[in-house]
Each structure stands twice: as C-alpha cells, then as structure tokens.
Length: 138
Image 1 (cartoon, rainbow, N blue to C red):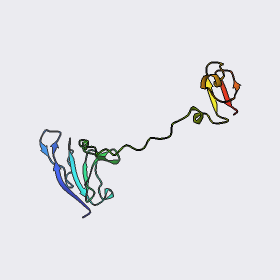
Image 2 (image 1 turned 90 degrees about the horizontal axis):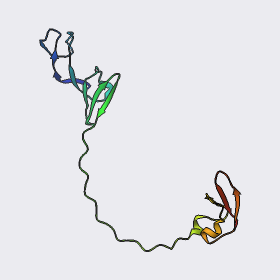
Image 3 (image 1 turned 90 degrees about the vertical axis):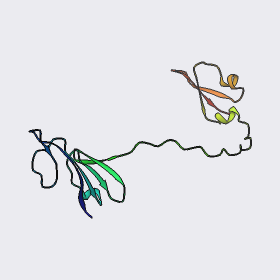
Image 4 (image 1 turned 135 degrees about the vertical axis):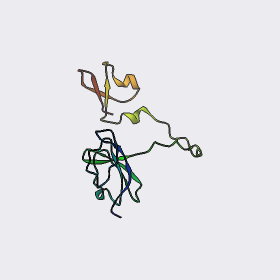
C-alpha cells in the first residue's frame, strides 16, 4: 500500500477563504492537518501537526517536530479481581537472632550493649561517632 492520504482537514488561507491541504496544494494553509495511512512509519513523511495511522498495527501517530509520537487512548476501567486463594500454612516463628547473624552490625544512638537491648549475643563496639555501631561476635 505504501502511503495514502486518506482524509483531509481544511484550514483557512491568510485572506480567510477556506482551503484544503493535499499533495497538489502549494498555498499557505493555517491550521491544516493531513491524516495519512501507511504500512510503516518510514512510509509516512508528514509535517508538524499531521496525523497518521500505521496499517495493521492500529497505531495512531502525531507529527511533532521531526518525529512521530504515538497517541494512546484513555485507560479503561480496572477489571474485577479473581477469586482469593486459600491461606497457606503458618510459617516458622521468627527470631531477632535471624536479623543479626554473627559479624553483623547493630547501629544505635545510645551506648547500651545490644545484649541488654536484644537479650542475646556478644557484641563489640566498633564505632562511637556519629552513632554507635556494635558488631556481633557470637
């Protein structure tokens, strides 16, 4: 198919008379717009403000500066949620020890040993400013 001018939108010439834009037109046209249909976007050479449809892809394009911009339609309503599945089995209970394995760092703004705060582990203070950093040793 290549390129085909499928529909013309008119405008007005500087003297106010109605004009239409097509391949033959050499008159200056204000607010003119061509609607083009082509097999690929490379088939379509338009001017700023032209519209185009790419055959078989159902893409609608607008010519802005030196490129074609795809025009997307409004988003449709959100669909219904599917059925909720059964609840899975209860997992193993967590432990604070899992959060701070050996050699991990416990940041804190007070100089209290994490063993007293958390109730486990042997900790070494490795930094005191701008905040305390405690490294778990066992």
